[in-house]
Amino acid sequence: MDRRSVMRGMATAGAGVAAGALVAGGGPAYAAGAGGDPYVVNVMSHNADPTGATPSDAAFRAAAAELLGAANWQKNPISGTILKKVLLIPPGNYLLTQPDSLLPNVDGRGGGGVVDGITITGYGKRTSRIVYAPTANDTTLWTNYRRYKNIRISGLTFTSNNPTSSFCYSFAEDGGYGAQDTWYTDVEWRGDWKRGIGLDGPPDSDDDSVPQSDLNSEMGFDHCQIGGTYSEGFLVMGMNTAATQQDQFLNYWFRDCKVEFKSGVFVKNVRGGSMNFIGGSYILTDTTKPGTFFQLTGDASSRADSVLRLYVEGVRFELRSRDHKVIDSRWTRGNITFVSCDDTAQHFLPFASTAVPHAYDFTAGGNSGPMVRYVDCALMGSHQVRTGSTPTTSGKVLYDGCRFIDMNKSTGADGFLRWTGTAAPRHEIRDCLAGSTYTADVKHPA
Image (tube, rainbow, N blue to C red):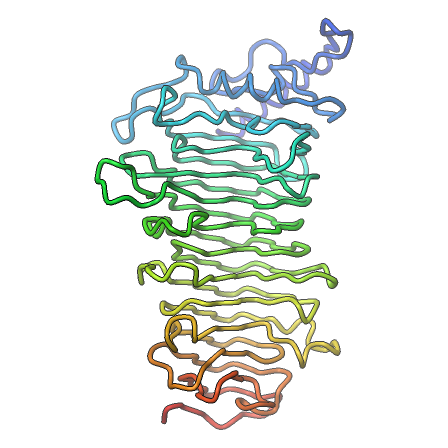
């Protein structure tokens, strides 16, 4: 949508409010005036309340129904049915109290059909705000049940005041019912949530006629802000641990995001993966509660190697408690890489030297782990690898050109890299500083 379209939508919304018309109940009608962009559905046209004094569920659902109405569908040679219009949310504070008020929860395999090309746009985070205050627990603001593809959501702030609530549940399967290609730009999440976005699919079956989990893939976050709390995780990849095909949930990008949340988990990776985090500031703010940025579980032993991949570059981490972690990994193989990252912002505080911000378990899969690499990083506290009594069969921890800011030794019980068992993990340290002095290069086994 171009600038003129946005301005026409704003002017139209303003005209409706200025008119001050009354609805049947005697209150003001927050309706857009006549005219406007024919390719825009404005929630104000359906009497949404931008003051937040009254719920706008009915208005948002009516706007979504108009957006998804058959009259607005058009055939596309690439992907079938696409939409002619976009959903516009003007400046304001909109109160939603019912689940699935942002988009209808309709099964794409049923009568609703798959819809390609969903655009929901506000006028910028903090400017266009949606407060989710459900009257029931354990509900979701919007559900993508194998229906919506190529989704663009931008310029909005979402706030939850119910810690059992979730922002989005996305269920995908094969046969053209994947929930592929979702991009969030200039979006903010605030408040207390159970989950931000949960990715799921059907369980596996030996019957080829039974749908398989597939294609909850290609999801991006650009200049977004993640605040609040997440008891289960902001992004949970693979909610059904028995479904091996959830490894087809892959390719996730976070670019220049501001991740400043209070407590909980940022990314919980149970299945799928291939994740990239480039730039940005990541801070855990609640010093009284635990928090983890990357929780990589070992729940599913049959995972594919191609998705066991985490790449983090140019991120500044700020940990404000000994209970805060950058990463807690139980991966048995794969690749984990940190390049030019810094987690030393709070290293001057008393807890820093005893903190373990990076932890790896090399015992989860028979004395094996991923290839872990740190390049040109500044690192606080110490790192820990859980090991047993036998040598590492695969996996390694490597530090290249890094600074261990709180330690004067590179390894050992009082050094930077530590391990729990009698057998040391395979590791290598080269051209690194321990404190302010270069430490001797180490390679094990030699």
